[in-house]
Image 1 (cartoon, helix red, strand yellow):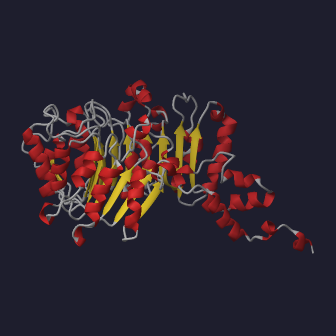
Image 2 (cartoon, rainbow, N blue to C red):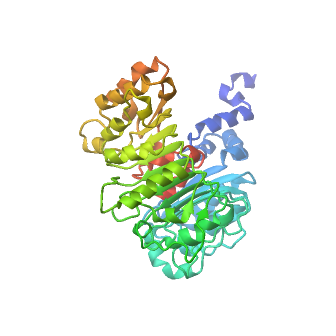
Image 3 (cartoon, rainbow, N blue to C red):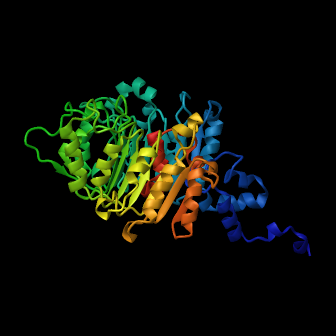
Amino acid sequence: MLRAVLPPILKVPDDILHEIFLQCLPEHDLLIDILPSKAPVLLTHVCRRWRRVALEFVGLWTSLKLTLRNLKILGCSNLRTIAEVLERFKKAPARLQVAVARGLEVRVSILNPLLVPFTASLTSLVLSRIPISQLRTLPSGLFPSLERLVLYIDREDYKRSAWLLKRPIVAFESAQALRRVATSNLSFSKPDVATLRLPWHQLTHLIEADDNKDSDRFFIEFLPQCVALQWLHVMLLDGNLDQRFEGPSGNEPVKTMQILQSLTLNFWGSCIGTFQYPVFFDNFKFPGLRSLRLEGSSMDFDDQDAWDPNQVDRFIHKIEHEFHLEYFSICLSPIARPSLERLFKATPHVTMLDAHIYRNYENFFETLTIGGDPSQYILPRLKTLVLELGLSAASEDGEGETIDPDTFAAFLESRMRCAPDSRLHKIVLYGDYLDDISDEIPFVQVIQPYLLEGLLLERRVVGEIRDGKLNDHWVERDPELQDWLEASVACD
């Protein structure tokens, strides 16, 4: 009789509650915080039964983000409470993010109570702004199951702790399962310093965002050790973009990275961010490369301050004859149209084109608009076009449209009325908010009639994942990083 009058929710079996609880979590693992006002912790405060079911359900606690926002949370009692939450990992494979708020000075040990007891089960770890002095105390051998690592070091902490760097971070050197690593502000350049020891030979994915002005050593000593590397992002500095770059000495052969498939060249490390010739290209070959991304401020092959004619020819020859690009991503602005034409003519096998043209997409679409002669088609195999609308000069300045609808209409008409093998199949739009890519946007209205002809349109709102970051919006669009979006912490 009593059971008959119980509220329906109390009759729900535990296994169904498990599924309900999982639906309460954010869509993306990297957003699961341990705040009392959010799931999963919030679910333990509803009633006695929910607390028991939530605490016993290991799957609810296997991905957590901890942000140390103020000095109060660093108190001993609070750290113990947080450690009790982390104990719910039990022995299940776990993903953990620990971040110190920008500007917060940490004077107590946070890794010993919050990390060390749980390292055996961790498969993914993000450490952001953790003091170098504490990272250095972690012994080798703590992470037998770790597959993915992201380390972001605060620049000011790096400067203050320069003397500590002669005693390297060794915690990850024997992590036998480690395959993906993203680092920022950890110099690999000084000859008397090994800031971070890694099992380079087993890495498959690497983001290297070292902004030290003398970063040649990474390309000379460490990159050649990455024999299993498939995906690489490098930040290029002024010293990597001119003849001061000191490549292999003597008669050392050019290094062939046979299985590298994806390469991102980030030019924001140089003083002006301009796309220039990456001199390390002369010391490496990438015969298996299928994906290339260029990220920086501007691109103009006729800019004599950035390029000489010989460098332009070498670069175009490399991407045309050595690479076999099927995916091409351009995150630059502005772009000179003649430079775009040279790039696109050198990459005729590209089927997916990703673009974030911050200042003006006009040259981009004018270049891609094709005429009647199939032999003159630019990117004749293009099937998927990915466009970033979340950050643009037009939206920031409140002036006009990010994409001019008339220019876009001419482009789209040419791509839908061309030879069948060259027709566009899909357009994917990324925005921080739905308003960025809604049907109210004029260029989106241009797309609508073609949907009846079979053109596919996908829209992806990613503002919550980006959490207000200003740079490197390409991370959310990269097909290879969809299950490792937390790597963007290293690109902050």
